[in-house]
Length: 122
Image (tube, rainbow, N blue to C red; front, side):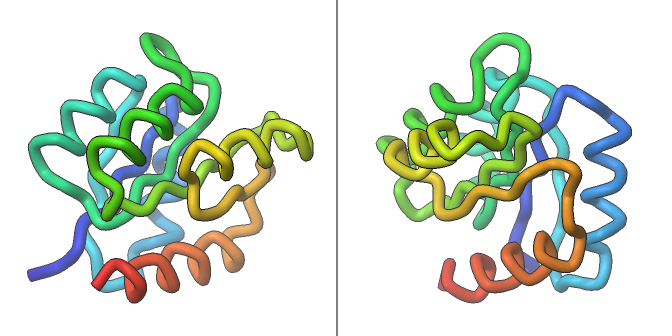
């Protein structure tokens, strides 16, 4: 069974770019547009990896990272954000994110990061 990757961003175009970048990986890509939707999908489908924007409607990415890391520590969260300050990245990692990818996205780096996290997810 293929592992699932949840791509969470309020911008549909960004989700599409990420989905296309991941198409060569052996995974199923699921999409979400807001923080509440992310938590529901994680609870129901248990993706191996979540790519998570920081600034989204409903719940912001930091709150979502916090919730996922406490409720589902086996789900690997990678924050993908245009708010790429060192302080923001450190906060995301302290809350449980496994990595931080800055926008504009280096798609090769993103693919390698997702692939490594899929392999590490067991």
